[in-house]
Each structure stands twice: as C-alpha cells, then as structure tokens.
Image (cartoon, rainbow, N blue to C red):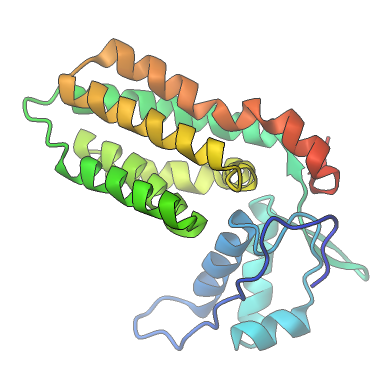
Length: 239
C-alpha cells in the first residue's frame, strides 16, 4: 500500500483477523482493525488500499473486506473511486473541528457529573497517569495513547455514562489522526501528561470550574497544532 507523503510510523503490520469465537461478524472485525490502523497512522492519509494485499495481510476473503471498506467509506475514513481504487481519506480540518466539538461537549458534561457524585475515587486515574509516565520514559507512543484514552474513558465511567464515551470514540477518529500525528514530539507528550494530572487533581478536589477550563484547553490542543502539522505533512491534508 503506497502512501502520499511520509507516514509518522507505518512499521506495524495489520493484524490478521482470527476466526471469531463469538457471533461477531468477520466484516465487523475487519472494519475495526482497518479503522484502528487508519487512526494510528499505520495506514496514513492518502495510502492506497489494494483489496488483494489487504485480504492477504488480514487473512480474510473479499466479501467481508468489501463490506468493511464500504462502512469505512460511510465513516469518511476512505474514499472509493470505481475503476480507480480505494485510498485512505485525507484529513479535513472541518471534520476534526466537528469531532473536537462533540468530544469537548460530552467530556465537560461527564466531568461535571462525576464531580457531583458523593465519592470520587481517583485510584484508577492515578494508575493511568503512572502508566503514561512509564510509556513516556520508554518512548512507547502506542502504550501512551492507550493509557491516554483509558483515562478519558474512566472519567465517563465515573460519571456513570461509559456508553457516551463509545459514542465519542466513533465520532473522533478524524481528531485522533491529528492527535497521533503530533505525538512524536516529546514536549507534546509531556504537556499532555501534565494536563491529565491537573484534570485529575481538579476532579479529586471536586473543582468543576477549574476542571472544565482544563478539559476545554486540553480538547483543543491538537487543533492548535494543526497548522504546523499541515506544513510538515502537506500530503496528509485536504480542504
């Protein structure tokens, strides 16, 4: 699969789709693997997606693969041109901004709801902060991103709305690509950890006002870096 521009990190292969042990459809598993690869930039913006190559790497037949690609096209993650081929969609900053709006709005509400509960257990949040520190020391960006996601998911869980985080996840794939593109910068990761720690401190103190300010600033960080990232990776973006 060829890319348009220099990928941030495309060394990790796609994971073959194992025969399901449950009633989960193969096409669903293919969709989830490809969506994750696009989000993580293993399949960078503009990369061509050969059905033959994908079927071989994922160890699946063409039918579930085509079903998955159709869903990815509906999600805005790939573009399919008849008789031409399929490519990973370029990043549209309007889509990123819309995803930011949804994420910020729901996370502000979740943080406030969690703070209003009589008990605020920060044990898991503190453990996730330490995992982020360890990942940063190892320069393990995948582990850091996973711990980052888990921390935000935990805020929704503490609010009593874990399903809302799943809705955010589906919406913010475009935003996540921009976030992943910024992660190789050590200063960016350090700043994210410091912001996470401040958010957890505000939650533990039940300080809704400070927490809301921190979350809004945190949610907009990736978009603030967009001009520089676009200049560095012009082939990844479109109007």
